[in-house]
Image (tube, one colour):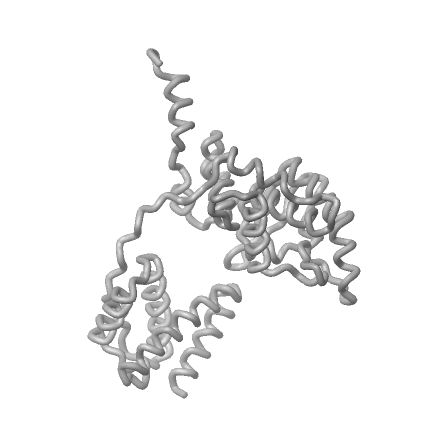
Length: 299
């Protein structure tokens, strides 16, 4: 009961003081629950009884279970935040998680698609059917804006400004940003909103403003969007890996390779720190060849 009360207070802190999104809080709770399971296995009854030795055992367990470095770092950071709060509330006396070293980040380049790989995807949706119009609009919007899947799922009709070609996105930490979209996305969105969405909404007696809906006229979930992209890959008989996040990587990579300003891309992606955007500055082989041929005196 003591641990349950401590976690409840922490959740209130995240909601009220930190203004964290529902999804962020869910991730915190998932990591805390994972550590509480470990505590039960080790017969540790309260957070106050956790020692640095226990934390070392927990880290060893994570290593044996082959968790990715990023996952281990996230779990440690989560518990650091929890214990820092519990110290403030005088529920625990120390925060030994601050002594736990964070694993070095893996320097992995983000997956992205070449333009040739994308072309076939844009031709497979049946634009005479409501679902096909919706799927095409989702694909075009992901590639045109680089928004996150959760952000896309929560878009409403009033968030789109067709006149100037922008969407209003509610990102992490409930931060709003305007993101522009191009003519292809605009055409697909208008076709879907004016035709396909209206037909799909006839299946739902409860009117709502969510932009993307399923066959029952209900809000299309993040999982539903991932399923749609997987189905498109299957129908196109492609072997590439695709997800909303791969399309986000692709958007950023193509923008920067074409000469876009790094801070502009940062703003469109909704990154709080420029370092998060810099991972997309990797250069493709095609881009390297073009630069070499254009600028080397003896190319």
